[in-house]
Structures are given as structure tokens and as C-alpha cells.
Length: 184
Image (tube, rainbow, N blue to C red; front, side, top):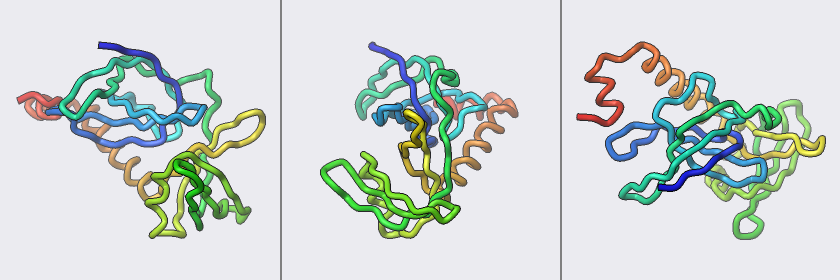
């Protein structure tokens, strides 16, 4: 079993099932733009989209392949905080195999055009224009767009995460707790 460390910004949170266990899947984007998927059993209360995090993980084998399970997680104080801007995405163009150009307007009316290495954004094309949140990081005094999050999905994820956190805080009865942890 191998392991390692991670550091980056949370760009997605999804409830996921891994075998019998229900876990939170964290989509992480590193400052260099690499995407990583990690899983955590008991997420901390402060975890949210755009949060800079770091920690350690181990690799676990599943019938669907290897996954990365978080062993420890902390807020990463070495990374600058992410900046979130409300955007209206109006156009998404594919340029190259894994690159897209995203164009639209900031909430204050200024126009933008950014290049991203994330072809998943092409799935938004049928719904354009779409209200979104842009996750930016500062590099050399410039704000660089690292990902776009659909605003409706963000609101839904925030509510779902808040609900699951409340369940954990409420101290579930033992049968429910065993069920959520994947035991029978």
C-alpha cells in the first residue's frame, strides 16, 4: 500500500459510495492545474469549495481500481486563499485535445476570456449562458482562473454537505451510524 501528500484547492465535493461505505469525494486542483480525486470518511466542518487544503493519503484497491483515501487533512496556510467571483459563462470553445476557452462576463459587467485545461466544461455548452462561480488563485499578482463551478450545483452541494455535517454532529444512533459507515 502506497501513500503520499496532497496540496491544493477544493473544486468539488460529492457524496460517493465506495464498496459498502459512504464517503465524501473531494476533487482537488493543485496550484499547477493538476486534478486529483480523494476520498474521506469523516470530513472536517470547515471543508468547503475553494478551500486550500493539504494532508496525507494512502492508496486503496477497490474492484473499480485504486483510489486515494485521506489519512489527515488541514487547511493549507502556505497557499494563498482562493478568490471566488460570480460569472456568467456565455461561450465555451474547445482548442486542442484537453483545453477550452471560456468567455463571458463578471457580475460587474466586465468581460473575460480564460483558457482552462478541463474539457468537462464542454458539458455546460447546451445550457449556456449559465451563472457560475469562478475559482481564482493569485500567481505573481495576477488572478488565474483554475476552475468554474456551476452556481446551481454549488448551492446544491453546499446544502447537501451542510445536511450531512448536521447528521454527523447529531450523533446518529448506532444502527444508522453503522449503515453509513458501510457495516451490516
